[in-house]
Image (cartoon, helix red, strand yellow):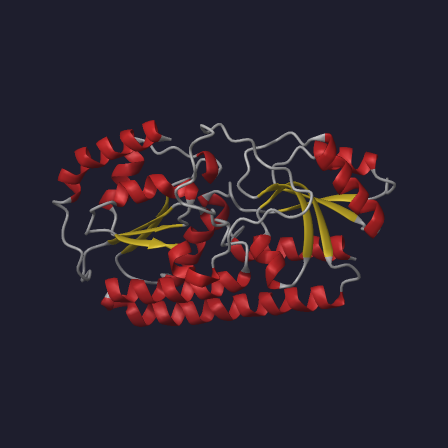
Amino acid sequence: MKILVSIITAAVLALSVFAGCSGNAGQKTGAKLKILTTIAPQYDWLTNITEGAKNVDVDMLLDNGIDLHSFQPSTDDIYQITSCDVFVYTGGESDKWADNALKNNTKVLAINLLDLLGSKAKEEQAVEGMQEEAHEENENEEHEEGSEYDEHVWLSVKNAEFLCEKISEKLGEKDSENKELYAKNTKEYIEKLKKLDAEYAEAVKKAKYDTLIFADRFPFRYLTDDYNLKYYAAFSGCSAETEASFETVKFLADKLTGLKLPAIMTIDGSDKKIAETVRETSDNKTAEIYSLNSMQSMRKSNVDKGDDYITAMEYNLDVLKKALG
């Protein structure tokens, strides 16, 4: 990580000469406003907020299907960040490289979603039975940052409502020409999110069960907290672990048996091997295996053709209805 930070710092110093020549941090009036996001949920939100706005271009950085947890920026990536007008990113441990790239840059309006959430941001949670991640750190080293925050802030419709409103306000300050349009678009988009939020609440209210078994990483804490759902999981949302211990499998299998749950959950891209092992280890051999869409590897092309944030969250709602009975 230290080597990566050094590379980024050197690249930023080399590119800052060019970035510094591209204008000041004031309002945009006439020139094209270049907005860059890291991942697809943010890209989709910004596309909806800026729909119909003149001289505005929205683009996405991680558009090759790579997981944000393993992303390492190239020099070209850093140049895109330092030469845009607005950069929207999640923040947190996986985005430390972005903080370094933006250090001392007064031109770019940097919108950190975890910072916007403030007290609404949640720390990574280790629930009963969850396998701890093995760290390769020196035993004498301690985490200077303390607890890590759960970065998967987009996996909550309530968060999406709040964040879109805050992003829209900041865009209006940056681009007064389109301020009213941003506000109008945001209001219309939030109405769609509120409708979806109500559908989630109603589905959970009618459900037979209130607990999910995740034989996988668990990036859905914001979602489950929104609707008071309980969960047990093999790994935390940002874990790099891929192999579950016997104790973890046995714990999840016993929960599946004891609670008589109809389903085992995974996330998109899973090979489902841990889920299948949990099922075979339990007394519930007929449990279904379902996947929720974490949107971590969603591409720009998916959003542009309509397979967007709301569509993904509607899909997740349908899956939850099946999993909760």
